[in-house]
Length: 434
Ligand SMILES: Cc1cc2nc3c(=O)[nH]c(=O)nc-3n(C[C@H](O)[C@H](O)[C@H](O)COP(=O)(O)OP(=O)(O)OC[C@H]3O[C@@H](n4cnc5c(N)ncnc54)[C@H](O)[C@@H]3O)c2cc1C
Image (cartoon, helix red, strand yellow):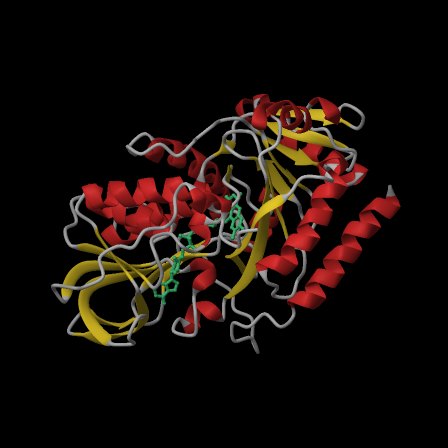
């Protein structure tokens, strides 16, 4: 079993430039995932010269080349909850940001030359309990007519038409979503950025900034030999998401990094796969500790994700738990060999909202995918570029909303095992109530 992402078999992250031949740039972006690269593309398209993207690892080696490749726009709260938290106007704008993210991804996709297995195959949400199915029906009834047309409910007993499992109490199909190959997508974004003149440097860790006559002196450290380099930049944008370390204390106090795990099976007969997940749709569910799964782009493997444990575990350990979850879902996969097991970091905010804004040291940030951010972090990269450009109307939605911090927390989520126990209890209780 490999402990690298299945996606890397076809699109392993590449290194960028390994040496700086100048020590000035106009915008320095930390992080070469979807948010950093997307910001760089928007800036370069707007004519900004000397945009640098810097990453401690290879291009997109964080969550962006490791994820499940399920695209959609899923806020983790309802409009009513958002209104209570942010007020009516911001709440409406925030929901609009989530809606726009999917359109934006499809628009940006048209500008990319490299293919990345984009498929509008649709997605399925499995209802864990009868109450969850009622909530899905209420959600469908509450959206505008255009959106409602793309949502289909299959009640309990009908769900086998979309998914051959007995674990759900019905499902909702969203016909306006789909899937990508995440590592090919990050490669396509990087190539587009370079084509526009963006320079991507890898193997350099951002260590902090100091202000120098209206510019930022950015301290970088070469990962290979710990040599320090200072780059002077007009503006700095941090797109570190779940990989922000102690060098970013302001973000660490506001964000909870969480590991998410995946496995891939060996290639299996196409007919068997088509029977389990017809039409190669992608699947998630309504549990607190959700399962998410799909077939590989060629349709022959099952890729299964979730949180096997709420403690940090190795790819080998998590494979055991994830395989159990997969067999719980599809008992017929008993004999399927697991060929890959891997994990990556996602990033949560206490209010479960994504955030874009400016830190007290004058640098900008885009942060918190809250579990699913292929479209949202692509879009927020673009929105943060609008903010850096000072475009009229940029201060809306998730941009500059209050970013809450938790006191007595320094970035190490010691409470996650307890949260895990509580969530497991809630998931069990939901089925007892049925
Ligand atoms: C296993 C898994 C499954 C997922 N499945 C889905 C899914 O199906 N659908 C979906 O929408 N989302 C999914 N996600 C979430 C999605 O991958 C992320 O939301 C998205 O990739 C975030 O992009 P990003 O650019 O903000 O962050 P990342 O891609 O994580 O990039 C952050 C980068 O910052 C760099 N960095 C951090 N600190 C520093 C520093 N000090 N100096 C230099 N570089 C630094 C890191 O090396 C990293 O490359 C999943 C995530 C995981 C881990």
